[in-house]
Image 1 (tube, rainbow, N blue to C red):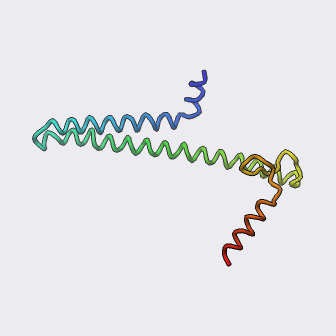
Image 2: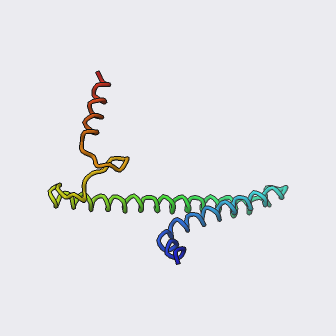
Image 3: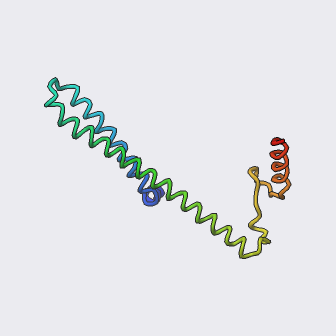
Length: 124
């Protein structure tokens, strides 16, 4: 059940992986076909089907993978926008929405001020 759900949600990553794998196989088979032929006229069909087809499938796989990554980034930005909207709607006083530092502790603002002071001290 979990695999079916993951495949449904990440269909573009699955398609990208399949396309990249098929492109690699096409290039390898094309190379084996070309290497077995002595005359250039007999090598052309292998170059066209294996080489061009393999490069096309690799490009399609890269495009699908990039599309999946961009979709993930947009989903994260929508989530962040929702949190910021809730903070703005509550006037910034909502206890559930306080900022956390990287170590998980609440950010009181002192750390940011210390970092700013250290940064400015390094410039002089």
